[in-house]
Length: 219
Image 1: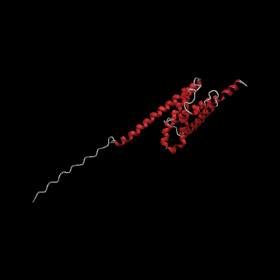
Image 2: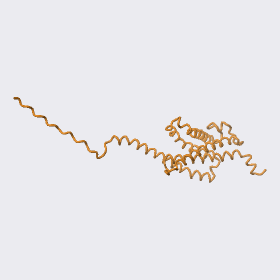
Image 3: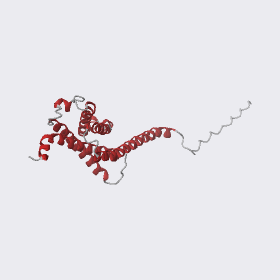
């Protein structure tokens, strides 16, 4: 048996979990970035919204699958041996407890928000949109998890990915927040503008005074 075969046999589960974990981070980053771009109306190209929405949904679902594979294949790692509780219960794993716990929370949050799309009519579209804003938290928790518990944090390609994508997602998030505040201020100013008198409007002319009728003389 060659050295490569021995490595694959002893570290195959760990390599699969490692690859699926990075893939999950990539898919979540792309999905969240597209979602923020659409919500902030950054890309206003006719016909592009539907295509972006399709990519947004597909990457979100693919991200959920990658997260599941990341957790399941980790169960087969004989060296880490996390057990079901280690991958299912936050902060139950002995390895990098804080960062792995944040990863478990991110996975549950991604599952909840991802599947809530198909129940948005039952829970109300307005409430669903408010809850859907928490997808940014999935990205943040996933990134912190990868940086704290991942084994590729020192790799040049991993650092390059983080340095290239983090400013983009952060900028889109700030733009989304600022635009939302501007819309809220504009909405609040509309009733005040409607109630205030229009500039240059002519004032109504005063009613003319009627002179009193002279009294009639007797006789």
